[in-house]
Length: 407
Image 1 (cartoon, helix red, strand yellow):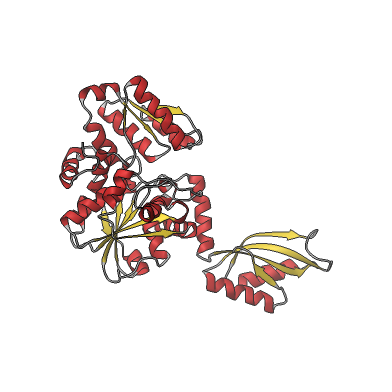
Image 2 (spheres, one colour):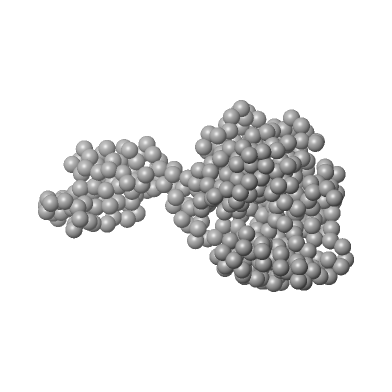
C-alpha cells in the first residue's frame, strides 16, 4: 500500500472534505507587500473552526475509515492542533475520538478537546511517550491511529491548501510554508508543482527545531535535539518519513528563523493584518523579516498562516518581546542625582525626547559608592531603534550617563 498520496488523492480529498472545511481567504496585503518588497497574499488557515489547517487532514482521514473503524473510533497522540481537529470533526461525523496528551499539554487545549466530545488521556512527558500510550489503545481497543502529519490521508488533506491557493492566486510565483512534521509542505508542494511547476515552494522552520534541515543533510528523517521555541506547532523532533520522502522532491528551498523574528512576525501580523497567529503561523513572515528570502522582488508570494492557537498569556509576552525586537520597548540604566528633582529631571528629559516611561526602579544598595547619586532602571516606549539611540545620547549629554540593557 502506498504511504504517500498522489495528486489524484489530493483532488479527491478536496471534494471529500468540502462540506466540513472552510474555504479560507487568500487576499493580498498592501501593508505586508510594502514591508516585504513583493506582492504578498496571506492564506488565512488560522480561520478554520479549530484554528488551524489540521482540520483538512483530520476530516479526510476520518471520512476514509471503513464502517467498523468508524464505530470503534480513533486515537492520536497530540498536544495541540491535531487533537483539536480530530475532536471537532469526530464529533461532527459521529466517530469516537481519543486523544492522548502529554501531562504538560496546555489546560485550555485539554478542555477544548473535552468540549468537542473527545476522551482525553494524559500520559507521558512528551509526544513520544504519549504515542506509546496511544499505541496501547490501538492494540487493546482496536482504535485506528491517525498520525498528525505523516499519514497518507492526512498529507492529502493538507495538500488541499495548495489547490485552493492556485484557485485564488493563479499567478502565484512562490508559496512560503511552515515546516513542522512536513505533512503540510509535502501535500501542498505536490499539489502546486503538479499544476504549476514554476511556482517556488519555500519551507520555513525554527532554528531551535530544524528537523527538516537535519533530514536533508542526512538524506532521511532523523531525530534531533530541540530547544524550546515560540513556534511550538513546528517543534517536531523528527519529520515524518513519508512526508519527507514526498517533500524533498517538491520543495525548492528551506530556511531557518530565530525566536526574535518569530515574535516580531506575530506582532507585525497583529498590527498590520489584525490577525492573531501562533508562532508556527508567523514563520513565513519571519523569514522575510530576517531577510532570508531572495529573488522574490516584485513577485506574487503567498504566506501560509497555518494556525492561530496561541495562549493569551504567551501572546502578551510575545508582544512585549516583539516590541523589544522592534526597538519600541527599551530598557536602560542611568545614574541620576539622588537629590530632590533628580528623578523629575530624568522624566522630563524622556518626555521631551518624545518617549514614554513604562517603569522606573531605583537601585541604591548594589549600585556604587557615590551616595549623592542613584542608579535607576528604566523601561520606556520609543518609536524604534534610532529613536532609542537618540534618547540615550540626549540623557548622557544632560549629565545622566546611561547604557542599554535590553540586548
